[in-house]
Image 1 (spheres, rainbow, N blue to C red):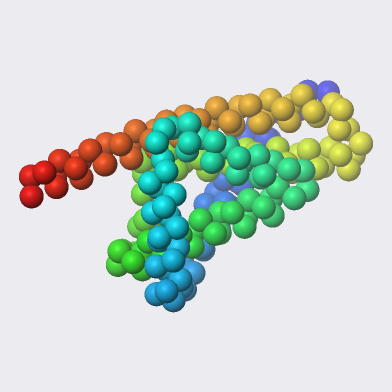
Image 2 (cartoon, rainbow, N blue to C red):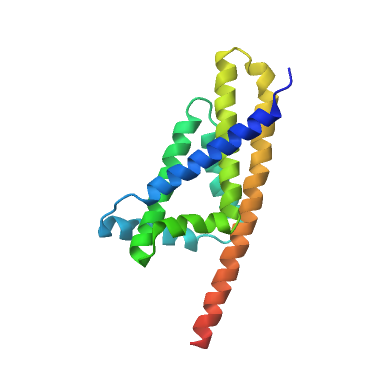
Length: 181
């Protein structure tokens, strides 16, 4: 039996929006100045290691694969996204910028929107596969589950390419500003 792709798309969009809501909640987490500084330092160390879009893709894809695990995926996704929100909270505290504005920036720059669609698709795949396992329709669903993983891996790859380009442009801009000053 062929799956209803419209329902899967709707489910993906609902989950993507819910994950984004969890990110916003995480960005509102109250952190001590010491916690904020520690998280900011961790984020800065991670950022210095970004040397290619492949690095961004592999990081995001590895996280999304955890989100795609049947039964556990939605819980893992919620935790990952909430913790990511805490990093936005830390950046807001350290830079004295409203974290809600920081959370909105990746969406406006498109790559964040694509990432959340990718994550939402992976979680939707997890939920659907979990349901099919319970209904003993696992074998029928496997090929659609694998296609889901592939499709949303491509979405996450496109997001990584855009994100890397934006990072490089921002770094070059800052380097040029420093040369002028």
